Image (tube, rainbow over the protein chains, first blue to last red):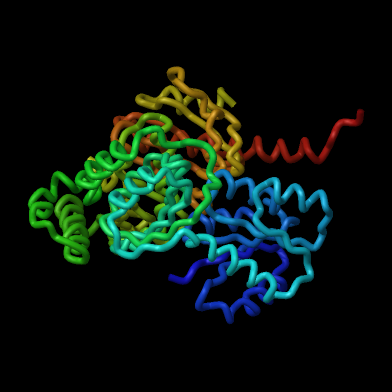
Amino acid sequence: MTKNVLIVDDDQEMLLSLKEGLEKYDGTFSVLMAADGLIAIDKLRKHDISLVVTDLRMPRMDGFGLLAQIIEHYPDIPVIIITGYSTPEMECLAQDGGAVEYLEKPFMIDNLAQKIVATLRKESEGGTLQSVSSGMFLQLIEMEQKTCTIRLADKSSGKQGVLFFHEGEMLDARIDGRRGEEAAYEIFSWDEVNLSIQNECRQEEKKINRDLNAILLEAMRLKDEAEEPSILIEELGDTKELQLKGKTKAANVTDHIKKKLQKAIGERSGLEDIYQDSEWDGLIAQIMRLGAFFDSGKLRLIYLDKGESNDVILLPGKETYVLLVNPKCQRDRIIALLSE
Amino acid sequence: MKKLFKDILSLEDVKGVMLFSFNGELLFKEFSSPLSEEPEARDWWPLLMHSLDGVSEADLVFEKAKFYVRKTDLGYLIVMTGSFVPSAMMRLNCDMVLPALNESSVSKGRKGLFKKRS
């Protein structure tokens, strides 16, 4: 799978010349671009990024701010610093802050590319495995007392996650911006994964306090529970029994939502489209944090007005269902109906 | 600011109000009962605010609570409620508060322009 490298610089010309210069490495990695640290954070939420190359001096959020955010929230993602205002102190600060490489501008693009390739290669220095069961493999890691970072990709959904082990003990897990047990449950619910092992673990803080077996069992239980959006589980009892998979299941859920709205509200439901989309998972994860902080229970529905031609309703579950509705729809009635 | 939110806080089933700047700084909070942990103790508010970028209004419905999110000139207003809140009335109250909030952001700007001589 091609890896994504995010390049962050407020100098548009620099960004474009780097993108052009790195195009010949397309088979090894693809380039995404961001003009400052805040945009970079947004891209980190929305894409699976394997490495970040960042300038230091930028408006809104500079390279040091971005480096701190990455170390805090994405400790598995290595950062290469590029700067035109280098001083020995800056270099020290960047390396103390967690940067893996430091390059002074101007530099040869191929030189940067070599550093990117060498850093990415470390991701799989401990080996790669295809089509394995995550649970069984990870119990072996625990038994062998390994210190490593494991990157996993779910074969059915393509989702990616990371696990951090220190001497066989699982410290943390990450999917997108989600961390800790919540992320571990999702990773362990994946039946078949491809994985790569890096023989180091940059994560130091222990964010998971349950042992691996307890996490595996809980993941299985949650998986059974969360096959469909929570509000539809009870209503789709028959469907669940049918063990429908993939597109048939999605079609069944969308059909059910349409019928439910049609029956209760008719044409005035303002429903214009329904589809599955994981693009919203970052926002949903942040909102779930808010709910967890206030002990609000399971997230059932999100209604968003972005001032655009359609409002958006999100029904979170294992797969997120997105409904586009007319802003003049019977909002409260629809919310009540879909979240009851 | 407490005065501004008085009407919202007095609505049935409203549990609290928070106002965050777009950078995630907590500008105001008031809850009907004490929290076990203060919101300031968490560092993910900036990310939440950033995730809401472009959203002018949102309803977040959980099993045991609801949140109504409204964009203002100062940042995002979050009203925490139970499941039986009169939603339309709450939105109306927020509509009424917005001009005063926006005004306070303007006056804050003016204060910045005309600094007192020391």
